[in-house]
Length: 616
Image 1 (cartoon, rainbow, N blue to C red):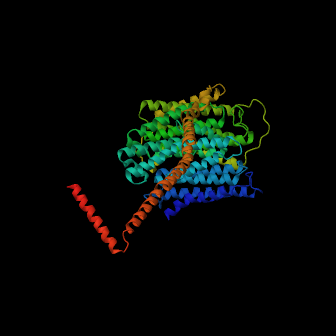
Image 2 (tube, rainbow, N blue to C red):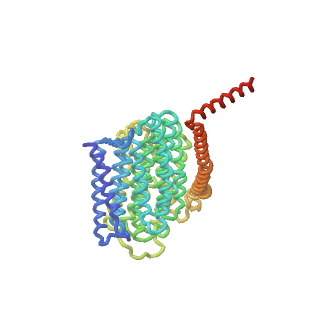
Image 3 (cartoon, rainbow, N blue to C red):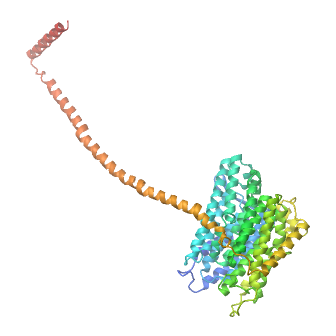
């Protein structure tokens, strides 16, 4: 029964999602009479709601399931404390995002909802997989569906190119997961995730390096961060799901899950911690320089996931998990508000959205709550979760970098808040009010962004979360630290709100530190140059060799045929002729006349005597 619950949790969104994605619409991406599109939204909502209920049941009952998949690599799923928290978060955010999308997505609805359900199934499989085979399967489906969602508006040039950049960049990191699988098989003969820390020395190091590469790529950490900027060309509900609780978050989740492997290597945990802290700092500066709301949110996503990666490296698993959950609510909320404004105002440029949070409080108030939470302003959620992570950081320099990143988060959140709360420079035309299906998810997510910090407060829910995760001894943030970070967040946020128009926007930071240009210069161009050289070698050497080989073979065959006819055949004929002549000569003495035989005997005897006389 428990196994059936777990399989149903994954297959329930996968099967109707596949049907909807394949059903699609007509050639224009629209269903002909609109009914199929409306039905797709209703089906997706019903499936997502049922999935959320199953996730709650699975979190309570902690089921396990196994099925044969590959020799030595079964498809095994299980729900433990960490995955219980994550599947509930993913399914809840997925349900709210799909509800918003029913009012926000007009064209291609069957394809959109089908891809979203498939993506949701892949994330749930990622969260519950206990073997590398299951994880690889989920990783592949998640990558493929993310491409389809980012490139959803495929009739224009930008989204397909953006989807390709995101897909290829994350695929580059995904190669690491295959290396990890190979190391697991070679070093331990099993794909089970919990056996990775026990691999023999070299194989353990290779597995850790592969897992790090795959997780950092998915989590948009340095140097992979730039793909997140391109992914903003996808619809806003896609951004709200992919970059809050799903694909990007799964990179951080994987490192939290495999913290024992990182610690066992002696170096991977430090690499993860420093990469996360530096990403939080660098992408925080990128977010502060943005002039586009979705770009600001994208950069802040990489920065906030940097805190989760830092937590995985530093061993602050409870803080990292609490931050992952709270950030999911905050970022889904902010991306959906950006989508609401993009739909009603047709822009996502920050200065063009000046005053957008003022006229309609059903959108403006949730955005304000989300931005203040992102800034780390108490008592909202990300204030306490960041402090819980900082409590686990022991290295002073690493602590300083993380604290600087926390200050920057107050700066970029305050900038967005300051611009969107300012009075508009001129009167705006009357805009369409958000629909109920758009307002309800914003209200629920705003509530989550406000209160989920209790997961990091020991007296409220922090100790309970540590017990669920099985890490009761992890350090908690002290009162002094929380007061200092709260004061910093309030002061910096206030300053950023007041100076939002005058904050520096350096071009390099606005251009995501030139990471994509560097990737093109250091990876893409050399690879393309090598591919071109190999293609030319193929055209000029291999193809010519292949074309010349038949001619050479034909010539060799002709020469051999002539040699056969002139040499072998002539020799055979000569031998036959000589044999025939010798036979004829041998037949001549056989006359049948007795006197001739005597004469031949006398002649032979005389010749023998003469020979003996000569040889004496």
